[in-house]
Length: 302
Ligand SMILES: O=C(O)C(=O)Cc1ccccc1
Image (cartoon, rainbow, N blue to C red; front, side, top):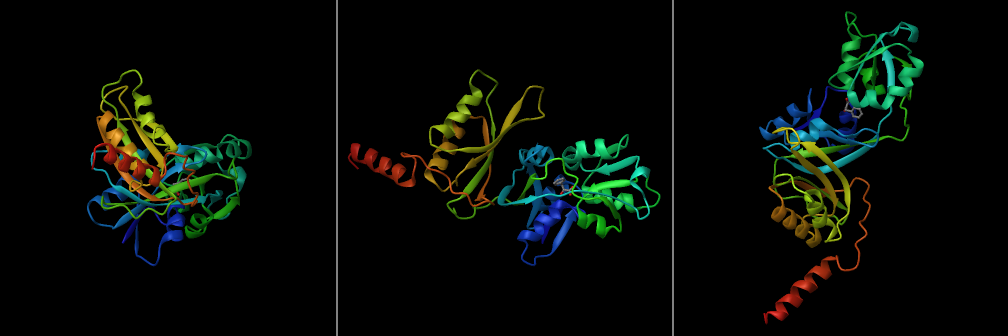
């Protein structure tokens, strides 16, 4: 059984359709509910949104994964998202005063809505599909939802305007999260996700973290500071790096982080959705690391 950020009709469900090989699925109304279902063994794994090319990281996901009960990302899916503005049949664009949608959908359609639905008030709710479901209720105080076309169809709404994203090339990245275990084998084109917690704030703390990657030729694809929620000003770093924990340059970088950080949560090594191969500079290939190990052994007479 696979969980996903639902209800049916979310972009997350569309992303899950791309990777699901006939396994049963179960929707959850929030990201924490979906991830806790993984922790409790209700589902084998769950798909949740993690990053958008326009809005950045999805805080609900990053913060839950950075918490005390870490899980493991085993796969990623990246899909383009297209939004529609939809309403109960018969509603005209001029009737729309109150719109309901998800915060990331609002962020990606803000300019279009301001220009074409002047004066309308946008409320941010649980998910785009939950917004469509709410708008379908004739008693709802909202006249329209911003969601996927499939959600509009699923809840019996009518599309007032199609393709309303401000940036037509936006991509959203989703991750399939399972209970911790051995990561899938290295594919050669992988990403590793982790959260680094610093010792007490001090000059150069971030540099110490970055050095661990730079010094082993590991490229970063995302780094965000997130509050630990323990006290004001206390931050951790959520990081995606190119490579797999079973590759020596990544293993060495992770060991380096473990030495200089208060805590490192390893959140998984998994194949990149775009299958882009990393460019590994001279001195950082697997052979280079093995050669260095042999050289050291020879110095020590082993
Ligand atoms: O609300 C949804 O449908 C989601 O799956 C989250 C989301 C919202 C907006 C863009 C991409 C994903």
